[in-house]
Amino acid sequence: MKGKPASTEEPRCFYYRRNDASHLKNSNFDQVLSASLTQSTANRFRYRNRTMDIGTTSKRLILGTRFFKQAALGLLIACLAHIASAQEPGFSVHGEKPALGRASSGSWDSTYLDPGTVVFHENAFHMLYVAIPRWPHPLAIGYAKSSDGHAWVRQSEAPVLSPDQTGSLSATSIIASSALVTEDGTWVLYFTSVAPGESFYGQVARATAPGPKGPWTVDPEPVLIPGPEGAWDGLAVGDASVVRHDGGYAMYYTGFGNIQNGAFSEKRANIGMATSADGMTWKKHDNPATKDTLYDVSDPVFTVTTDQAGWDTFRIVDPNVQKTPDGWLMAYRGATFDSATSIGLASSPDGINWTRVSDTPELTNENTGKKIFFMTLLSRPAQDYLFVELGSSSSTDAYVATRPRLSE
Image (cartoon, rainbow, N blue to C red; front, side):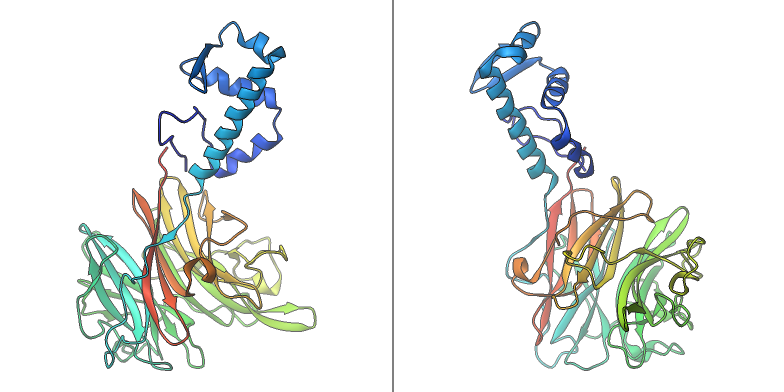
């Protein structure tokens, strides 16, 4: 994404995407300067309210005029500073008040509230959120609506879908993670069907309804299950994020598996991908070149960092993917073995090959002032929204963080 000058008083700079700007620091100064001056549409140089023609005199100035060198250096520094500020808009949590707070004591959603998944449909924001009155307790799904994504109103006092409404599908809890509306108006919900003995993971399930209030009809079988024993996702899957792609659908999911670390086996989490023509039958991404037991059947598309100084070296979970005019964008949660969970961003040109946007997380416990739990991402033309479950070990609420989407 690119930025534009906010004021005509700023020096004329030429903006690059974040990944394209890195070559500037290794370029020859005169080459960068000459390239910038050549592209100047006014063919003039403005410095401290003085304007100088640079057409025929620029060669002499570049060769020997100390003033020009100092002025040009100032322009270049200003340009680079403006690039940095324009390219890193960052997510900002809006205020101390939650977008959707937990309900009053005695309600089914009175203690912990996860924003689940958010859909923009028919000029409104729709949230299928996850909540419980206490822990441990079966998680259920509620529905709220907003005109602006900031102020939300519950549309039902009771859950719109609970574990006892899943029919033949076995689920101790259900956690909404992704939703979409088909061309015929059918609402499709993807959720984690929590397995016995697990708190938040198990299998990925699917339900359909004529509207977000339901009634929801749950598919009798899960649509995505763990891999075979010993696979990178052989223990549990969940956190499905489904987007339309190539006439069908792409799903990004968390996969848990036992990874050997020296003499020890550790439960690690990475992010996988699956594709489907109809949203019901899914095929996991597989690189045929990998034959190790971990990756014999399928491969993750985004893994923990191998940089030991990184913040997401132990596990990465909760992928939330959006296709934008600038490419694919993913928000995810990560952590080291002994650190709190933070939220990071990754980008991709094709949905398969992913690169971290930054070496540092986007949102942390420190810069939010609260503990981070689940979240969901929604991209709109003017800005990106992150709906984040924030709070403490005793209670949580849903907050909204946004960042502007810089135009071309």
